[in-house]
Length: 202
Picture 1 (cartoon, helix red, strand yellow):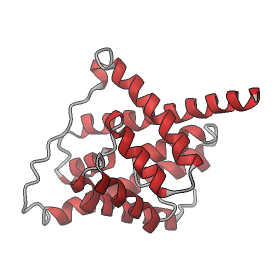
Picture 2 (picture 1 turned 180 degrees about the vertical axis):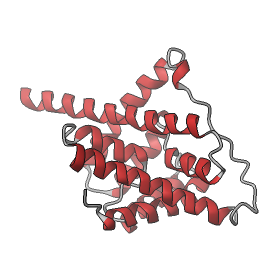
Picture 3 (picture 1 turned 60 degrees about the vertical axis):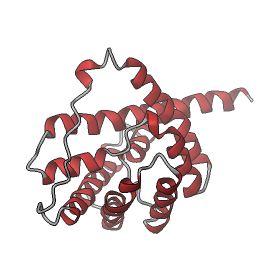
């Protein structure tokens, strides 16, 4: 498989910037949304967030293991690498304690979190329509700000922190990283299906 080095560099650089600058501000506010939009414009073509990559995976050709799964999987890896490099810089290679603690794996309690999962899927469906219909990083970033409470946007940062922190909580973090993005991607897929059905009726 040929690796798109330009895309990988954009993912690493963008994720680095997100971890170092944007997530310190928080994406659930105007400043965070503006910073995310600027990062998307600066690293044009980069997904930057696992939820974006998973949405591309789930709305792409699911049978294309090399073109869809592998290419997007490499983007996920690039995001984690960029986040990990930012953690190394922010902590001065471990000299400064971030007080980071891994989030517990929530999948075993999925029955208790069912409405949260449904909310994540719904947020993915709505946000993906904004992201793909509006040819603007601003609209997508502000859409994420509005729906961010229903989606976990810090998956790559959690993974990067876990890797740099001697694999602290790696099992819980990895499962959450995959499942959070996957549920948003499923929402994006369902949103496209509903949009397609509505389009056929018109």
